[in-house]
Image (cartoon, rainbow, N blue to C red):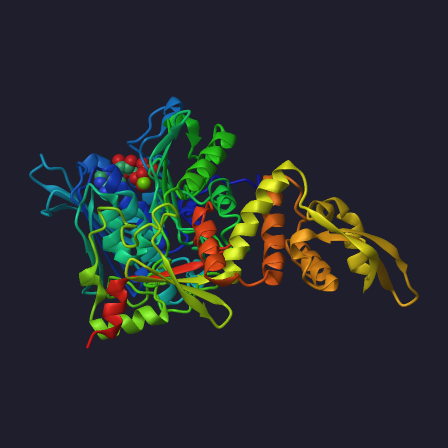
Length: 599
Ligand code: ADP
Ligand code: MG
């Protein structure tokens, strides 16, 4: 007897389920996507116990007649494509005809559906892939699918499910993502009997984002002017400079309405932030890319989380341009918006408009301690906020160097400069401001050659480890570009190397030479792969040297020096953050002061 068997259908479905149905959240994704494909205007998602006990999705979409209701449970039954030519231009979310049979094979499943024109609907009960009952049903037009006891018959899979909290978190994040992609659909979400959110249908994506994540979330983003390059359209929101998170869960990137995780899209965003964001952080973004369906192949991943682009280079360019263009016409962070968590993980509990209390995802860390305090003192600050549908950045008035009326008040602790500007208080951090200015100067100089260096009258001999010495020798071009000229002077008996330094970066000349060398080598080496001198590499180099040089810069000289620094800062390209994402300037608006001193 041969050893190859054709799998019975149920088993085949269970195998497919392994790819499509990873956890309750994936069930929600497939069911809601089906509802969207069926033209639903209103979708209700209910769940119990993280979705493991029950998931119920009810829609008011097209519904199915009895024949289709039975057919949709067959493997590879789909109404969305007919021939292979359709595969190159998919406009629906589903097309594989795998989801329903897969889900039904690993759960206790009930499908109730009715087309508007039919007097009577159909109710089908399935358990572990076997159809038990087909009855008439009197439900409203549309479709309701219940998935109970997920993986009850596949213990191996059940074991991989995480705790209720984690599954709930994934599930909510999934619904949120779908809701962001489809503001025109109203979504209601219930856990047990408790309503977690109710999102009214809207034309305005900003309204949907605000309803889901709150007013303040939008304020941390900058609206992108929609743009189109060679048939690829992009619109949405990009993080303000300096806004970053250590993972990418706060990046919602959609391609033709489908949320996609792809380095091809996320890397350019990260790259655009070079010079404003510390290493290891990623900018939050909500971006929609739209293109001809034939320019993208969605049939790459069983759960359709990945796509293949016909012209990946173009997509990369569009993403990079979009992210870079988002920061034109920026405004300073007001104290209210300033987050001390910038550059680290949020220290603050996520705020969430719903009541679930388990929302784990990507809330902005905009709750500074001060801000929380001021909210407690003034009641909810939300009331005073302006509607988002205008400009989400409307909170801070942009400072312009040309129209500046600032008056210098004084210096605080040798570290901050205080200015009065139209009744608001400006706080400038001297070192951070210097860092920004030096960075921009270095960057432009690097694009023409290397940074200025200062020759030492007497070469200086430094002791460094032999490992450092080897690194320095191997990256001489890079160090030369930074203005450091040094060469090995041999390795001694105990493995200690001598480094002969002939010239140092001119702008860092006030610092001890050892410090310059160590900082430069350490920082560049920490980047992992040593930067080359392409655009990105130059940005890294400029950021590193500017940080070192800013540490050695002198304090501004009197009121004139202070005013000059402020003017220069405001005239720079991105005045409000250092290359590593620290704020340079904070504005305390009169309203904010009033709030703080309110009784
Ligand atoms: P796919 O979405 O890839 O076509 P599915 O297994 O998810 O495959 O669904 C199979 C078919 O069942 C769909 O093509 C569609 O015709 C029908 N269907 C599924 N869910 C719904 C729904 N909520 N309303 C109407 N029709 C549906
Ligand atoms: Mg589907």
